[in-house]
Amino acid sequence: MKKGKVNFIISLLIGIILFIITLRYFGLESIKIIYHNINPLYFIIYFIISCFVFIVSSWRVQSVLRAYRKKIGLWKLIKQNIAGFAVAYVTPCVRLGGEPIKAYMMKKESGVDLKTGSSVMILDKFIEIVGTILFGLLGLAVLFLMPNIPNEAKITLIGVTIVGSIILYWVYYRTIKKQGSFSTLFILLKIYKLTKSNNFLKSIEDVEAKMHKFFMFNKKEFLISLSFYMLYMVVNIIEFKFLFLSFGVNLSVSEIIITIVVLGIVNFIPTPAALGFFEASQSGLFSLLKDSAGVGLAFSLIVRLRNVFFTIIGFSIISHFSAEQIINKEDKTCSNRKLKNS
Image 1: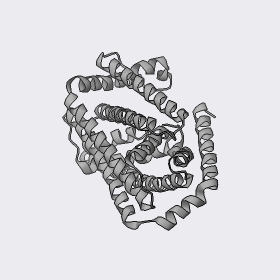
Image 2: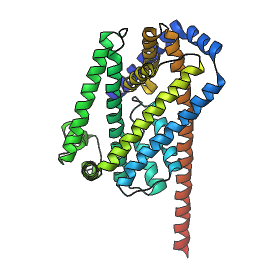
Image 3: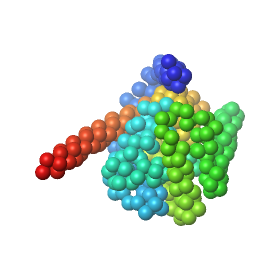
Image 4: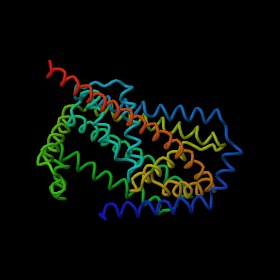
């Protein structure tokens, strides 16, 4: 068995064990909190805002596409974002994994070539991580004002923010200097040995060239995209505000910010759907914030249900998209045969 598969299985088993332990100790408390305090109106508002989150993300992608003189309708981008979310959710890292399917759908549905689509996806992810780090700095400031948060948590957040900033700066610097970051890693890690195509490195270099042009000549689009990410985070705060209100918990904005920051860090843990780590981290956080781990678990379970719902929709979109591609391919084959026969 390959090392990657072994690591995947180990991380998944750890996640399952964490999930079971958290559910065993705090599950009954969380169910009682939801059952006795559920407010359908607030929950419906939460769900509507959850849908709006995908619209804001699509606006961000549109602003990056504009730099490449490409235009895709909002509805198509929303579908592609949900499809990408579904794929990413079941991969080892929730934050990553859905970009290839989105780039492929862009090509097939909107005629955006794969190199441009890949550049757009990488830049969108870069902007997302920049926004996350900026939001993390805000969370760090909030964290230091909370005396009941242990120093270990503060040090962890500082470390994550510093490492993330260094990586982003390295990618940005090497891209604007035309030195390549992904192609450098491709060579250093000897990934070319794993690929069958000799043109793969050339494709990466073409993508980096497109990224270079974006950073050098499309600063306006970059700032607009970053603004959309900031809007996304504001919507995220409102979304979680109504979610907590839906089961009778009134959190301050600073407490919601900490909740989102912890969620963002956990999503980088290489476990499918952050299983177990999400529940355990939020239970631990709310045992500090509200002296009730059950509140954190209740929040985690509802968010997980929401994510599973959109994952099902995402894979339905992918299935429909795949079926359309097969039908279109068959139609083209039939048309070519008719032309040959005539």
